[in-house]
Amino acid sequence: MRHLLADMDSDEITEWIAYERVTGPLGPRRGDVLHGIHTAVVANTAAGKGRKARPADFIPEWDQDREPDAEQMLATARAVTSTLGGTDHTLRR
Image 1: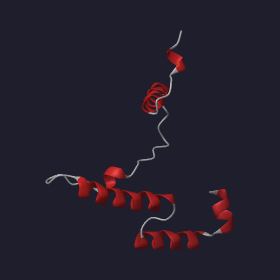
Image 2 (image 1 turned 90 degrees about the horizontal axis):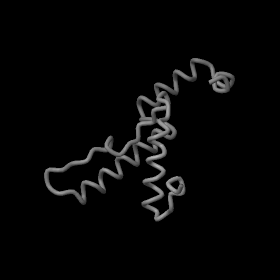
Image 3 (image 1 turned 45 degrees about the horizontal axis):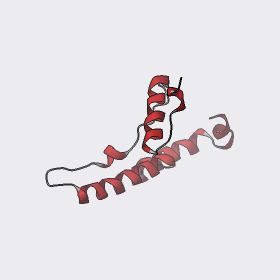
């Protein structure tokens, strides 16, 4: 934020906020939204009748306020390792 404020004053930041409200999100968030739209279209093409995916179903929620859960991260790493055919060396004793 310090670097941003060194390059822009509050008037310009306010203009960018207004621009984003008109045109949609800027930066990485925009990519997430566009990816969600595209993925929902593909999913809906393959889905049966009565099932409808929404773009929000495919947009990740980046929660940086939450502390990472070490057990959940280990479980995710084990699942990915297993899916890719790897070996979990933490289970050897």
